[in-house]
Length: 232
Image (tube, rainbow, N blue to C red):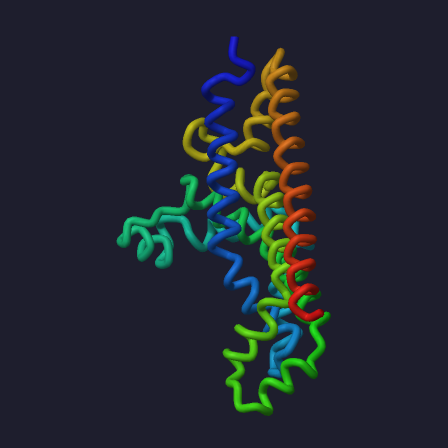
């Protein structure tokens, strides 16, 4: 007898798919936002910082409701996206969006701390030699903050794997379509005798989360060692 049934495997596969795309698509924006917050001087910086971190302090259900209110098929935004074949509400794509929104603050914070740890004198020296701001970032800042980017990506991925409140509010809990690991665990706990199924999925969740964290530590050490070797 298989340890996990087809529906349970579907939940695992969907969670991995949602987490991968949520992290991959939001990481470039997280890096740009972190750079703006770490190095930028502009009006509204405090407001931007507050908006970025808002999902951390709002109840996840509120975030999910706001996403549903903005992106459901009856709104102008929802209709526009639907015209291009992109439906978010009650689809796995919406689960990816919800996971990305909830993990975005963690990604930005990890990258921002890495940027702030970079000596500004290194960037200023490159700028005085005529390098553009983009070239300074690409050749000086970016290589030095790779460990922070990896940390942010792993944190975002882990958050996406565990996201429940915003996801179930925005895309519901539809087996085979929007049912992620946390939603499947919740579903098992709502039926008599479902504890064993929930326990199996909990073990899977813990294993994936620990694997992601260990991978993050290993990659960060490898990258940090390479950067250190280049500067010796």
